[in-house]
Amino acid sequence: MWISVAREYLVRQWQRANCRLSLPLALRPATGRSQGDVPGWVLITLMSAVLVAGLLAIAGPALEGLFNQAMEQVQP
Image (cartoon, rainbow, N blue to C red; front, top):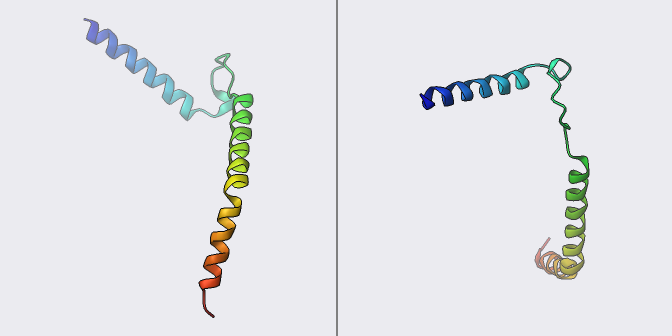
């Protein structure tokens, strides 16, 4: 019995997911949930930028030295 209940539940969830994916945004049923987490994405973007800037500040001179050394070895 519980298998049929679980199967019905999964079928209903699948139908809801298909409904959300197939309907245009204006025709989707209102869920009351937020459609995105803008502060979270802003925080991730800022943290990524700070990480890249920090790595560049630390490894920048070494990378520049490697580039210059490689360019000196290239012969015209």
